[in-house]
Amino acid sequence: MSAPRIFHNLIGGEFVPAQSGKTFERRNPADTRDVVGVFADSDERDVHAAVEAAKAAFATWSKVPAPKRGEILLRAAELLQARKEQYSRDLTREMGKPLFEAGGDIVEAIGMAQYAGSEGRRMHGVTTPSELPNKFQMSIRQPIGVVGLITPWNFPMAIASWKMLPAIVCGNTVVIKPGEDASVSTYNLVQCLMEAGLPPGVVNIVTGYGPKAGQPLVEHPDVPVISFTGSTETGRLVYELGARRIKRVSLEMGGKNPLIVMPDADLDLALDGVLWAAFGTTGQRCTATSRLIVHRAVAKELVDRIVARAQSLRIGNGLDPATEMGPLVNEKQVQRVLNYIEIGKQEGATLLCGGYRLTGGDYDYGHFIAPTVFTNVTPQMRIAREEIFGPVLSVLEVDSLDEAVAVANDVAYGLSSAIYTRDINAAFRAMQALQAGIVYINAPTIGAEIHLPFGGVKATGNGHREAGPTMLDVFSEWKSVYIDYSGALQRAQIDNAD
Ligand code: NDP
Image (cartoon, rainbow, N blue to C red; front, side, top):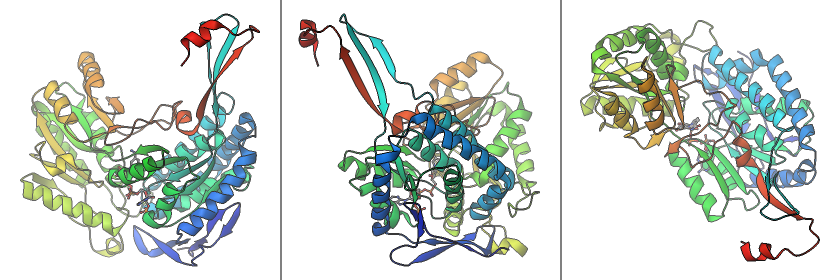
């Protein structure tokens, strides 16, 4: 095991300790004997210093031509690519997902660096014909100012990149508060940006706990945009605090994602889809399948096969290339998942497999729970309605497509969804009717690509879409420009005017 690294805050291009001098430690969730890093335990003073540095950098960064800003991101993409293996190991060590999944996190950041970097050469506005003669009109995008980013631990490189890279290519500067359980990947991303030529102060990192280091960022009067990904509970607070200050707040929050299997589905395909969507990243994906809504005609066959596969998954330290499912991120998450398993039993659901903590040998040093499947789940049960964020699959049986869609929609959330069927009419009906920001047909609820809009409806999001072309709308301000070259006051302009 390597020695713990010390991570100071990054403020104005300098690595500085928290002003309080306090630190906190992060340990590998697969092996708590392994100290991953020691981080600044920041408070409001550190956040204020970071915002000042970002404000100072904004004056020059916002005037750098967008294609030049983009070139830095494109260079960073190459550095990320060259370091993918090392950064995957860092990511696995800090939050637990197996190496092959950690690699996916880095690949998303590379894709976003390429995509956002290329936006530097597009950043399209709109031109339209005018109602009046000799008048030209267009809308342009402008940077907004200092953007505050608050990220979770589950995709520590990908989510940081989805927010940071569009924000900076638009000409904003950034203060980021990563999830306290996985901050190393944010440093790795920013390291590549700095080596690629990002000027000091354009991105600032303040580590620490949410209420002490995240909230002052949300409340800071000089941070007009907040982009938050995390739980709905925290997101609601962030939204309220932002609203009081009339901020733009982009929220990506919880999910309770349904995967529907119809009787005509390719069950081999559905089996693989359910397995990886439910138990990949130990169920700690915002897009994880947590509800299997299966037609009664194929339920038993499919569920028996899922249970057999779940029981044979290789669970362990993600640094071992043979591992298929890693630990939960921390002890609090273990207790939360075990509590939901108890709730499921008390509600009368049938526990088919898992439902317990793994112990003995190396498991005693980690946060491991066996993949868990409940059947006889009804839509009213809490395990069918609330986000568990762990390797727990609730199976609900239905008799028709209409019932499947109604059950799928009968929750507070709406992030991802999926349907397996060979009937194209059923697929299109479901695609239209599912209340979700993302729908997959004959593919699991996971696997979003960065060049399509990403986000959810209902309690999952507030209408913004990060990633895809819509990402620019989160991080830029529209300005409409009218140019009258008639040389005279056009009377209709006054009569019409808003
Ligand atoms: P949390 O809501 O606990 O935390 C998210 C971030 O908010 C963390 O950086 C946290 O800091 C910070 N935070 C906590 N309290 C405050 C506060 N009062 N003010 C400002 N910031 C605060 O979520 P998790 O990190 O546990 O992530 C899991 C959740 O994220 C799940 O609900 C999941 O569905 C959701 N998620 C949603 C995604 C989406 O795109 N829709 C994608 C990925 C995850 P700290 O960690 O230090 O407490």
